[in-house]
Amino acid sequence: MNDVTRDWVRSLPKAELHLHLEGSLEPEMMFELAARNGIQLPFRSVAEIRAAYEFSKLDDFLAIYYQGMSVLRTRRDFRDLTFAYLQRAHADGVVHVEVFFDPQGHTVRGVPFADVVDGIVDGLAEGERQFGITHRLILCFLRHLSEEDAFATLETAKPHLSKISGIGLDSSELGHPPSKFTRVFAAARALGLRLVAHAGEEGPPEYVTEALDLLRIERLDHGNRALEDSALVERLRASGMTLTVCPLSNLRLCVVDDLRKHPLRRMLQSGLNATVNSDDPAYFGGYVLDNYMAIVAALDLSRAEVLQLTENSLRGAFATLDATSDLR
Ligand code: ADE
Ligand code: ZN
Image 1: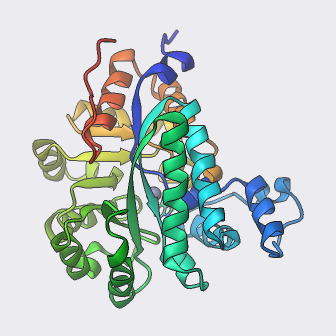
Image 2: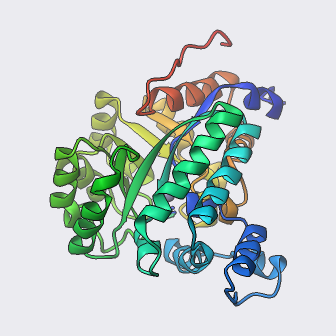
């Protein structure tokens, strides 16, 4: 019998480093915001929405994710979304978050960039006041869109860079390799932004290598398929790269067909700085603590392995956090 209890994992200080704010939009809030903004949803009930969350690959999810975020229209909407996420994170024992947002999913609908970012910052500030949760904000480029679109987004973001710590890359991976964004990541780096990218979720190990060599990422989002290349694993280990792993997301998007086959323990055994995160918790059936407990149960992780994961999350943050633990 495993002695890793939910209360114990909750009690461990931890950071969440892979969370799309738009992916924390619960169906209840989707309805609330649709009503507030006079938007007609193609669903009649929360149950009907949840029933639509059946995915066989990343692109199935992304279609419904972009549709869902269309209810977000005002600065207040983005504030409410962000604060609701932080309430959940606080309940899970999260002390620090480095969250993603997808501005192109909003500006394309005519929502001003400033309303998106300022609403998120309002929510983050309120979360810090009420719960003491510290934060960083990471702007993600949608990789299915063009390099030109990403450059335009970076330009729009320039007056807001005091509020944005880094740049990421998300959306449909296959067919949209990191190399497509080499120049825009170089421009972001020149502006002093930190760099992360989704790679090796569905895409091959070569995409991870491109993210390292061409984008010069400082943290790898997912990275599961890096394990197919032992030289790449050694490179990730030797450089101390943090991987932001998302177990329930991997299950729901069929990156793994059974959590018992999830590579997280193999990552730890290979000396990789793996962390546990929720990705899009409203869509994948759980927030960060649910992700810890699901992977603990599936892989029978020990207390020492869980402590390694939570310490990795604190050390992998761009903010400097105290990752020492006397709980071992
Ligand atoms: N956008 C939101 N969640 C994502 C994921 N898991 N992969 C790629 N893009 C995303
Ligand atoms: Zn993600």
